[in-house]
Length: 271
Image (cartoon, rainbow, N blue to C red; front, side):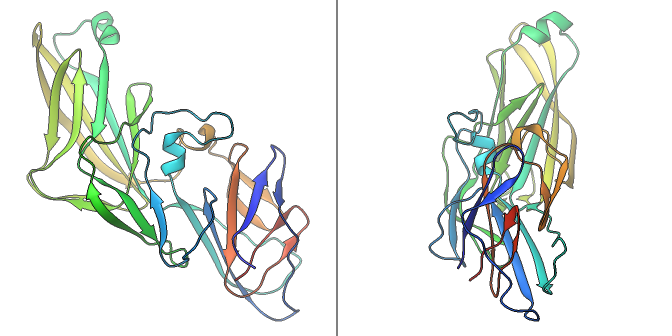
């Protein structure tokens, strides 16, 4: 059995069926991923980062940002036990965080009232994922119109497929009060899995309609807790059988190669 679906009802995780250890001695490798879907090829699961990641969750459908944020985890060589099998998820895509900062020439009121838009440019949104390793491989061609990020206060957040963008290629487009700017790097831009790529752009007003955009800070950090994804819940929830992020009501899947286990509120699938 494989690709067993689990649903969180707000209190506990519920599996579609009960699954048990194969016997008292056979060890198991546990694999999980989120969000859940049907899988035809475990080694080349087709995935797509959403173009419009600003959309909110609605009527049981994930918002664009969360639907793009592929999570994966593994607990290998677990021996049969009546104790909890702990398993942690990791972001397997690359995160982008863009912060716009008021520079000189703007009053606080003028800056607050100014319209602000952003796009993540020239990235491939399609990928294949090896569910046995969690490795994501970009496929297809880069989209021409870019990814619309999720806005979180003064920040824009997006999930992109890990990949390399050629030197000199625009990566970010910013529009403030109708004035646009495109950012590119003189060297190749590499979006790395499980990392958050942070950009801070300061906007100075020289005259009405004449703005200066400056990249004032850039960094790459570990992408761990995420106040945007999964309904802004960043605590961990220990339930029988697993340790995982505490998601809002939704679904995920846990799958493994050898055997499976049921632990009252949480069940695991097997291949």
